[in-house]
Length: 326
Length: 289
Image (cartoon, rainbow over all chains, first blue to last red):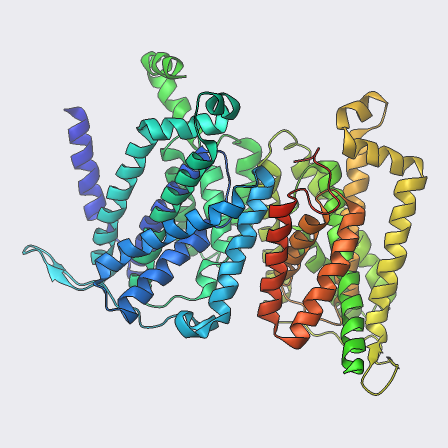
């Protein structure tokens, strides 16, 4: 019963949230929502122990695919976003053949190379991908009305509601996947790979599955972004954004489902709202870099460890539960 | 045609020189510290800005400014070792994140101090060695080639012939066993960081008059360096040099005969191919992952 009240209260807060903000802050809110999906899907991949540097480019694959399906083939936008996600997942399966011959550091660099190759292909081939200038005039989400509220998707508030619902559904799916036997197998692939293999788990297949699922959700995120912004180009998905995703995940901590979400929200609010409003425009990357260094030095387990600390202090029961779970 | 080939060959030698300076430093740091230094491209940038500041603004003679670049960036490396990599030794992703943070700080400092526009430095020397009408080598590029040959030979002699060099290689192979033999791990880490960073700094300082200096110039350099150290085998200095030469030749020729983007794709594809066929690189051994 209490959890229902919490959910209702949380939903109301999220619904009311954009109305007190300025236009540019509302836009940041839309991107923050999409980035939550990006970073959470990234965590699913890290469950199997692999850290990819191609995740943002794969999100871009979803964005390019969705933009092209709707523009060239006239696919209805919501369907093309889903197809974009499917394309990203399919590409991940293809990429898994070369990439999963490597592990650890080599996978990190190999995925980086694969991502850069895709990005250079977008740059080089003007015909479908538009070259360095990218794709312009992407079909917007069609407006519709649900009686009490008219959705006009040029307005950030409307798009925030739409992407909020989509992202919430995707996060719920990711959560269910992690809690399912498949998700537990992902953990086993990371922490007990020899044992898992001896028990008949096909490591390669599960790594590929995690990669494909994570890429599919990232692709949906890319589609959401493309149809909001209206233009995409190879530089929208460069290594800078990947660095941010990596930072959100590591500063937040990847031990729990909420860790990367926490990292993304805290750092985005800090970076976009606090530092921008205080007028540190030029110094923002400096302060951001400093925060990264300080948090890795003094909070190596991420922000989630603070939350866990607070929770354990509040209830002895929590400790027992967690010990039992561990 | 022959002249075009000769000119492209000269360009490749120049590219190989500064790439190998940067890649060897990166490999040295990885070998001894076990950290991939993402900020290595920004150390190169810091070397270039030292020359901008000293040579252009304070009228210091060019070679003195280059030496200052080497020492300044070497000290930056020492600071990174002390403040970041030493406390994070046991955290595999820690060094990566910390060096990304340091990269952002260096970029921001450069942008605040010098602005984001490109700096063009007055050429140090206009002299050109003309082999024929269309085969020419600017002397400024020759400096880079000479510096690379001299410094890399010196480094090789230092590592193979001196006691410090032996200690350094021992610490890279097995830190614990080296420490048991009385080798100071902190000392070797400091030497490796100073040399590794200094090499990037001198590469930046010497190429400053030849390229457009801007706060983001390290970006493409670090990607090239990654390709080179992967192809050469992570942790292998000889491999890094060989791979630098191979990469420079392929990249320069493809750029001349097709275009730069295709050359980047070819380079990255080669690296992916090497990773697939022999994940430890051409000269790498399997013990360091």
